Image (tube, rainbow, N blue to C red; front, side):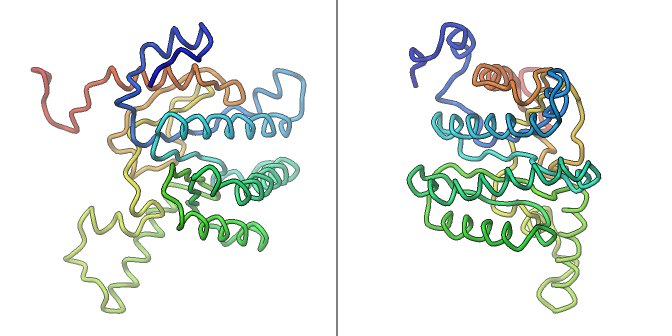
Amino acid sequence: MGVSWFSKKERDVAGQVDFDHLPRHIAIILDGNGRWAKKRGLPRTAGHKVGAETFRSIATYCRDIGIDYLTVYAFSTENWKRPKDEVDTIMALLRQYLLEAIDTMERDNVRLSFMGDLSVLTEELRGLAAQCNEISGRLTGCQCNICVNYGGRAELVHAAQRFARDCLMGLAEPAGLTEEVFEGYLYSAGIPSPDLLIRPGGEQRLSNFLLWQCAYSEFYYTDVLWPDFSKEELHRAIAAYQCRNRRFGGVSGGGV
């Protein structure tokens, strides 16, 4: 894929990216919305609104360059502790996004999937998510996974409970549990693990995100706050990923 249509600044970074060997699956922790707003003397809700637009832009761009899977951490199980107006704003933005997605998914050939415990969401949001899932079943394009009311530890507990129930019902045997079998009980069943995990906002931790799936992901941290995250910054992350030697516990090039 050529890069001549980028701005000069983007071209300088994009020139480092091999667009023929992109990561298949990118995961992003959408961090820094509140701090972005605070720096500008705005309410935290303003940061989430701008961050939602950034998500749309980056998700569309990932589709355009050929990323197969994009998984974003939109709302964690811990985020319910935030002020009610902030939570309400995030849920309103999610509703708006889902309504727009229902109208555009087939046109854009973009699939949507949801990870997390959706049972606590409003009936309307659950219905919109179900519509997106139904439409996605007819599509073949880039899949965007939105983690809502998601926690990595909760996911593992949920998967263990499902496996235990299957054992009690005679549908599974404890001795038959392997990593591959267990993965089938996760929210991410059938989805390859992320090759690259990006965390904007300056923090350098997983924050309970995809604990199982990121066992061998490459991590990329940046101080750029999510609302300011751009194609250029995505290029930097991908270029950094492409410079790494992924050994998956083995030895390559005489390394230790």
